[in-house]
Image 1: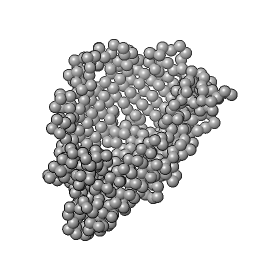
Image 2: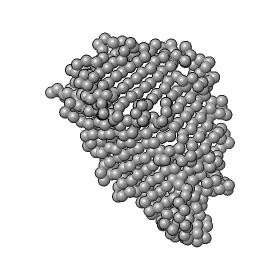
Image 3: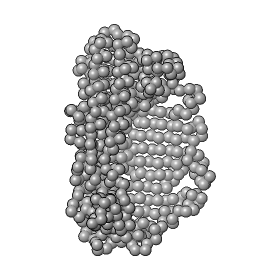
Image 4: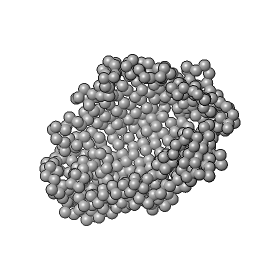
Length: 504
């Protein structure tokens, strides 16, 4: 417990879990008003309960049973692993499914674990931060709380020593609009890794990463300093908002470019950058309606990894002494699930505004584009029907994947199929306003065994699977099915293993 308290009091703000001290900075220009310690202590603890404990309670009550079955069962059927029958058995080459039962819902163990974590965090804040006996200064305009090492650390002498040498303070001021500003000050130098804006229904969270790293160094032994990043810059932000009873929204944003460099001192540098986006991710949950929503708007991500950090003796000289790099143009998407839903839609799925790739020494090994001629985004919907699951795309699905693995050293290509060396794959489902395919449902016999048709039916539009090493693409027109080629070599080009034919 003393370790947890040390993290909350001194370092928790630096890793984004400090429920009050590492939060968002500006009061939006609102004028400040006087505040005394009695009000500050009471209001801080009340709002921590309202937001943090309230979110925990709502999370624990959330039930998303069968919220994604329409999608997971279609995946099971496509893979021949459906267990939708009462007996749970299968025939026709399938195996008993685990997908429908393990990824269908948010497991109760997950919601219970999050509930416990949030309740513990709220309790620690009330027990070891915002108490009258911890008030160091009150002048009518601000209240300063100083963490008591003995209270926070218990019998942990190392913790007590660190907090005594590097005191941790929370400064609370009040605004005319009933919000409170909270600043986290660490050490005698008073590093300010985090600030907060806390209202009756909303907590905004902001973390200055360079300041956070400076604060972390105060609590890190000289021996472990070498394991810390050489560079950590950027500003991240998060919010928790109570929109109504049992209805919460949680969001996170990259406000200023995230820039990380680790391993340089060891000759194995790894660098990561993420461009700003606001919000970067958002989760909504409503335990009254058993609805869970998620949206993403990730900015471009670039990664550089020294070959020495990932290569073994199997790598060639180019890999061992070179640099691997990757670029993800971004990621966008949005969905909402509800208990017992019979349809599910993923909206605005995309990988940013340009081509994503992996490279070695700036020479690309693979590239990926999604809907490059249709705004680089698409929406996909899953709907249960009597025959199976209807999967509809809007406006189309166009995936272009290029592989140039022949640029790797020969030692890495020993067991690699020839078609991976230099190949361009093109998957296109279009030719209609909203092209769609049908994934057939499993059929059940009297013993509860399931049989799945090994086919994919094109309902509207046309499906084309092209590969540069094949003489012609596989074209499947509306009303026809994509079927396996009997006796095909499993090591051959995957598009040579399927054909267009009459649905079974």
